[in-house]
Image (cartoon, rainbow, N blue to C red; front, side, top):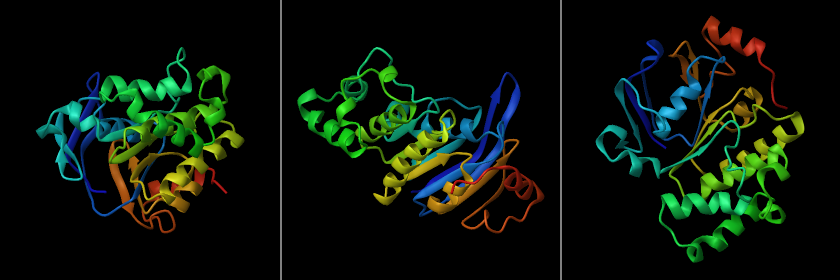
Length: 240
């Protein structure tokens, strides 16, 4: 994966969330964005996904610049997993995945049915394909959301705190599903507070604070250099 960001500025109601943020990431499979709540990491992820506009700057994934092509085509290259699965409550798990392929990607059902069933089997959801989201657990719903993101065959998968509302058992289920993606060599950008898990799967980590990149690299969790990162790591719980 390549990710290049030049002087990105994002504001909400005149409050600066990301302040001329820049980064140039090369040859990374799993990139983790960490930081305290309000540091700008989830906002940054949504901008990378093309889900929100920004005041100024440029973003490129694998040399495709968001500002230089149709945003709809850009979004089709990205699979996004939200904090709260974001499944349609009135549709079955199978139909939740079918909808994006039919309506957004213009595919015919006969072309993707077997692939959806394979994905659901891969994530242990085959017996739940006809259930509504409220009829399965939070961990299962989040796994279904991951399956939906994979169904479009994206270049990159973005996960925004996918375990934030789950108990420890369901958190383990979702982290295990993400680990399977990593083992399959999928390119992933992950926002999470599960620092122990980040140590286990990420090959590059960026620490954000107040909309700025404070530290970045492959070993910053084991060798933090700034007081800000040292303080942050001293407060967070580890995934064992």
